[in-house]
Image 1: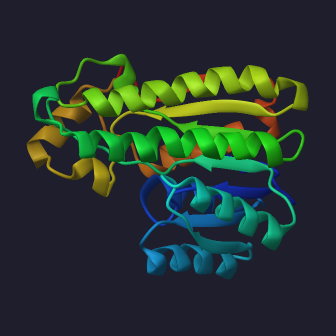
Image 2: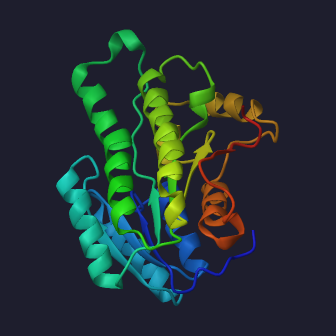
Amino acid sequence: MDTQNLSGKIALVTGASRGIGRAIAQRLSRDGAAVAVNYVSNANSAEEVAAEIKAAGGDAIALPADVSKLEDIKRLFDQTIEHFGRLDILINNAGIRISKNVAEIDEAEYDRLFAINVKGTFFACQLAARRLSEGGKIINISSAVTRMMLPGYSIYAASKGAVDQITRVLAKELGGCHITVNAVAPGPVDTELFRDGKSDEQVRQMAQMAALGRIGEIQDIADAVAFLAGDDARWITGQTIHVNGGFV
């Protein structure tokens, strides 16, 4: 996908030290945006992402924050705006997945997943509603599992369904500020998180479920996010865009 002109824009990408978040941060930088690279524990990887962006001529800073904690999210916004002067683009990418049947999930697992996937997204959106520049962009990461009945994905699918609804309502609330709010819903993507606990045969079977005959690559998702972050997507808001190669 051709790059878009995001020169002068400031982007915050949560969970950007690896996987999809890392690819998004790098793609937005190539499009001209300065990027705050958020991480929760992998400081070395986040600093590496920021260093790679700077080496390529961009601008980036690595910032720690646990998005399950409101005070951390507030500090993340404060530090981003203090460093860059403002914030134009928020990518809520940080998330976890727990794959267990309903009968096996305990309360601590439920609370942890919803704290990161839903609470983190909600309060980051709340702060963006207060502090994002007029004409800004909010892009949340959802999942194709919301449209499927996959055993073991109950609480993960529920959390991403909540993200979809937050996206829809917030788009209506922020329309008057010319801020667009959308979600990108990947199907299977070749990341460490996706491959965890899966055999090569399971991965192959899931690839065959897609119309295009493969699982996604992180760049497939980063390119879709970059499109929504740019001016070409100015008339798209309140939508969940399924980026899955015809998986569902």
